Image (cartoon, rainbow, N blue to C red; front, side, top):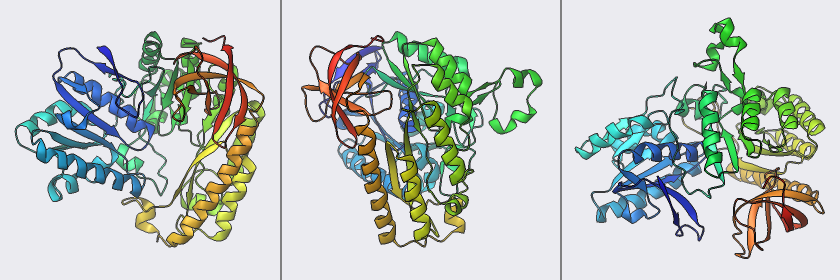
Length: 481
């Protein structure tokens, strides 16, 4: 594949991989979690072999795909609005085909195809290799659907086409599915059981990215700490494995170590962690290797033990505190971020205050905060009344957000006066005269461009900050450059 530069999206230069000889155009949008964005790169790779190159121009597309999220109602409403736009363009260009991928595809398959008739094909997260067959069905005038969940598919044999890439950072998927069955979450139903990818294929992808000039990878999974490779199969079946398989199994700490040693100058990140599954050996591995970034996304969802139990979170408030304290003891400058839900069924004001007090204890660097929205098919939807009034949810959410902003400023202020290594990723959104990158703690840093370029590791002295951004001046290249 050749690489071309596209200047059309938000004024940024994006690297798009294009395969010579391909004549059809694919427009693909992704919503929701990082896994969806990673999956879209797998889809683009599969369709590149079918004659499709990606385009940033919706009106030029022969095939339009939207990779969807069902985690919250707002995400689904956003996708529906996009489908309305696709279909308006389709009236002008009737040969254009429209498809839905991902979690909404699995959840609303019949509604999209049979009742509303707003798409031509529906493809679930484990069925992307069937896209060529499904497109043949569509081209012959038939609707096409495959949302069958797999117990084996990891797409480890697919080399992703990097979409909207800066050529510097990339996602590498290591697990699929989730077994945790939190009562508010649709992921186990839309993405299936938890299974891990062959570590050799992960290392090959990391090495390939380094050879192409990438400087940072993020190892992705719904629950990376559950990663366990023993020759294939579901994690829940590990007890049935042979003694040799158990003795030679690769857990997440070992995978981190393998990746860090494979490319010592490449930054390694990971997301998402689950408090009940994160073990001390993962934290100790982070300490051992300087190229593993000092940042952990550690969703907690609530600070109340009663609500945590109702959510089927397999940890208590006290166990979460113990984990946080162990992280801070071994990695004092480790940044920690959160997911938090306000207004879960039966949540009282006392439960809400428990959440605020937990936040005061941790003082997260940043977070992702939402009001509870009932998701069809989940245990909470089937067994619990959504009984917290909307205005109460919004008020509690606003209090959580305000406290997080206060803590975010507290955390960024701790960087003032320090010299930190920053990987340049792009121009600053607010000033074309400044670069934007991230430090090890995943905090955005902006500084004057001077003669540096995207992909450089630069030592930056932090001189100012907001609650989310560090501002500084470059002192020169870091030793990793």
